[in-house]
Image (cartoon, rainbow, N blue to C red; front, top):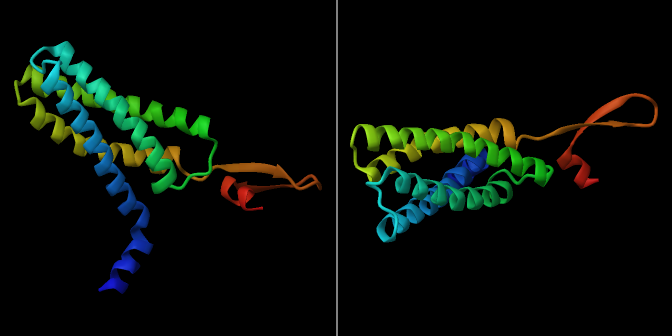
Amino acid sequence: MINWLLKMYRKYGELIRYVIVGGITTGVNLGMYMLLTSTFLDPDNGWELQAANVISWLAAVTVAYILNRNVVFRSKNNVVWEMAQFYAARLATLGLEVGMTWFFVTVLGWNDRLVKLMVQFVLVISNYLFSKLVIFRERKKKTGDGSGTEEEKTDQEETAE
């Protein structure tokens, strides 16, 4: 059984780590949201509902970036560029979250906490695709070898040299 688990982790480790980190990030997002809407922001007020969404989003994205960079994708890419891409992608999915929350809660009158939970599934999938395919992919750099030809090396190979 242990050998099978190790084999699965070697094969799907990145995805397993992403799911765990996604769970932590979702917990931060939901926990912050519930704290805010249980204390001083009223989810029945459209503006306060969205304020709770944005504040919980900021906390979750900050945790997500740190954990995705260091634990999930183990990135060695340029931090500033990568962080900018990460926050831009998360802004796109925040727009998706705000739109879906507004529609289901404000227009259709569904329960805000149920909607918040449902929307998380859409966001986890969207965020993984952005992270895997765009943000944390290995970057290729062109470097001259002194003889006029160029070869490609990844950032990870360069840090190993």
